[in-house]
Amino acid sequence: MPEVTSSAPEEGRAQLSLEQFAALLAALRGEGWRLVGPTVRDGALVHEDISGAEELPRGWTEVQEAGTYRLARREDGALFGYSVGPKSWKHLLFVPRLRLMSAHREAEGFRVESEPTEPPRLALIGARSCDLHAIAVQDRTFLEGPYKDPDYAARRERLFVVAVNCGQAGGTCFCVSMRTGPRATFGFDIALTEVLEGGHRFLAEAGSERGAALLSRLEARPASEEDIQAADAVVERTAQSMGRTMDTTDIKGLLYRNLEHPRWDDVAQRCLACTNCTLVCPTCFCSTVEDTSDLRGDVAERWRRWDSCFTLDHSYLHGGNVRHTIRGRYRQWLTHKVASWWDQFGTSGCIGCGRCITWCPVGIDITEEVAAIRATDGARSGA
Image 1 (cartoon, helix red, strand yellow):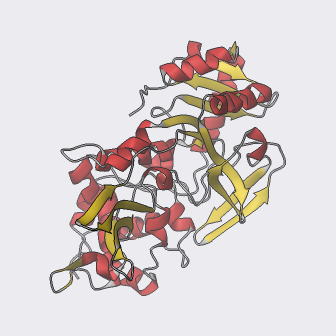
Image 2 (cartoon, rainbow, N blue to C red):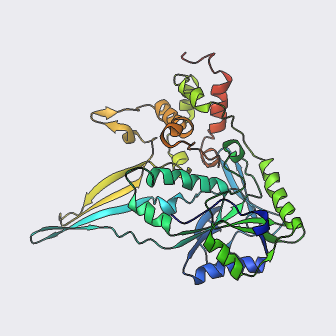
Image 3 (cartoon, rainbow, N blue to C red):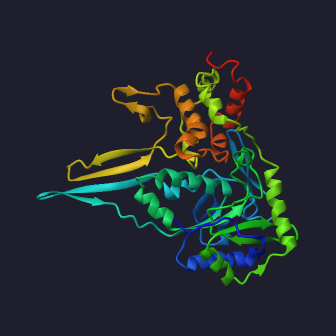
């Protein structure tokens, strides 16, 4: 994994002009990094390949509510004036479809080839604090313990992260409740805060040696006290304007003692089991493995692809499905996300990005479901 540290002290902060920010991206490209950042495509802000600052969503923002997403124009030229789009960074590290191996028939048997693990060098532009926490959660899943995922490890090693502290909270954001934002405190090479008042500029801080080296080459001037106060005010305003909240007090115990709460039946009547929530979630890691062959039987391949705990076959164990009802599958997803994840990984599996709320076609709200169970905790549990 790349070397990262906590955010730099105030005296290590620098001010970047828009021209210097563009030069930063150009420098990364010049060093062979493939830039991946937010851009407007297909009616959404998505993380895709970009060539430079000119492809960032200048003057665009998002309007998000339960089951609702649309782009809107801002009244300024902010490059990062939005919260989070439908895509997290998960698809770049835990890829949606991966060929694990292939076997080719030859005269004396089969020649088996493993897939090479030489992914591109990616520079993530505009990573938010909640998504950095999500990457850390996936690191625990794929890198810690006795068995490491080689493809994930190879991709994780080849990252340069340019984080951006959030200047706008979305209608479904609740990162403050989950203590995952809006300020990035780890997991980055460079962290930026976009400041619009008093002139459009960025406050930059290094989180790694290579991040510090890149900033020094830009010859950015040290940030003034005015710059620092303006950047801190941006983050504080965002923290005070969260679209959602979640009371996490003893949340593991709350859900464990309410496994038979009637609220699960209520949500099951609305849930479509469409898997949208798990596909947009930056921490979900369910997958399945498929073996295929051509019609002649000369080539066989093994593929790993994303799966979801909401699909009926995902819980199939010898002779039947363990969770054959939507009620059981939704309860498994939510309880694992914010309760049993603590037992497995020592952290929450929810980072408060709100994507599952926004992209649920029927507007099921994880914060609302937890609040409903908490409101009647003990009164109806076990009914």
